[in-house]
Image (cartoon, rainbow, N blue to C red; front, side, top):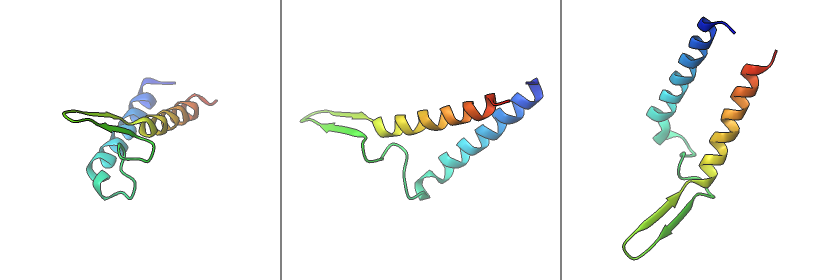
Length: 71
């Protein structure tokens, strides 16, 4: 794959990521607040682990990498 094509792909991914960050509050499903994310509230502390969000982002990243590596 040529360097130019890699840079264009990376730029498009950054634009999509930027749009998600800017318009994320208006989306019906907010990343980091999905069902399956773990929140444990203690007396003086809060433990938060976005398990479902991590799985979703991992699947999306795997799909993108698979699409880029197809020949």
